[in-house]
Length: 489
Image (cartoon, rainbow, N blue to C red; front, side, top):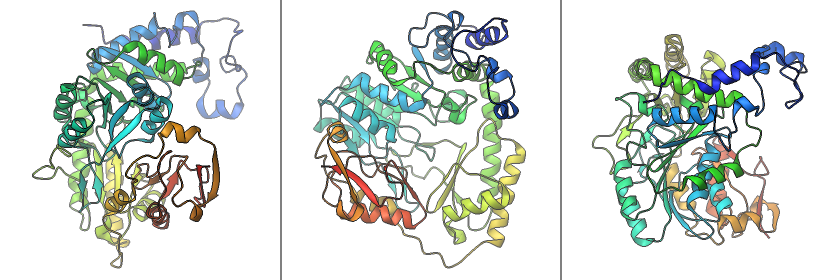
């Protein structure tokens, strides 16, 4: 057992920030002496004194032998891994590295259609070929959940040469599929299970939370420590266990994907967040769950509102557990869209949700929230239900089914081939039946509807325009107005 009270990286950074010396190295502001005064006014001076480069005492992220190595070993023990890597380019680079470490050009990887766009980037970088599985779907709430063990089993029977399986656990809504069963099936083919656990870094610290991915049998998991724990934005971790993953390939992939000038502020925040959870994690999560339960109970009693709960009986492996710190509130019973409720909450009550969709608002309750936050949230919804309720809302139902109907049956090119192909930009109405050359991700539902290599159909174009008309937005397109699309020439 390691001494989890220690913060080796944070301590080294603090010592070097306080050491009197003449700095003739990067960054150019020289510990804040040359920083803009408005930045000093906003952040204070201390943060800039600690904004240091890879000095001898601060170790090297790509070849750690000192305090970074010690901090990563402490994190591995805390999160239940055999080896941990600190990430300063977010979970995005971790997902990309996971794919690069397990798949090469032409290799198959099985993954859900509601995967994060970083996985699509991983396909482009690696040259891997995706075998997509549709997640289980709730037609009442119009929410996609997890892929099922049966779907994974069938895909592996059809594609026994696949090099890896990747899944999302939990989903953005806090829904967890049967990861243990998926791991068992995947391992029958002696290939690794990769998990995008960006929103589940807190699972290891309380028995009332879903089983952590590593404990459920994952070979590799990527966690956004900044999303639900106490690290700074962009600070994440990649964890590995067992012998199905080549750790050297992970290290080499991360050297390609991470900055060669990593922020020690981000790295130190990972060290501090690990210590905080190792020492006080259960207490902090107990308090967080208590706040979430209070919010869940009070909001569910407001007429016209309901909160996502585990269905009974649970879906067939696509929804077996729920992160109770994640609240998805259905607002359509008030005659409002999620976008409208989000705007009212933000502008009138200074309550800001994580994201809005057509029928829902999703909120993250974390260790940083307070009882006052919950009171403000409940009061906002109470007032909205009384003063902003409408009766004339007509919602487009079965949005996910519409989404699935737009998907191309197969890739015309691999994502990598299409991404690097000669392309041209055409008006949207002229792109039907052309091959897409960019990632198009509409919100809602926040899942790429087009990726490089797929055929653009009229259904796709109609669907994207429908999302825009409802108040959603499109990311990934070079043209943010979506009047044009980039296609293979």
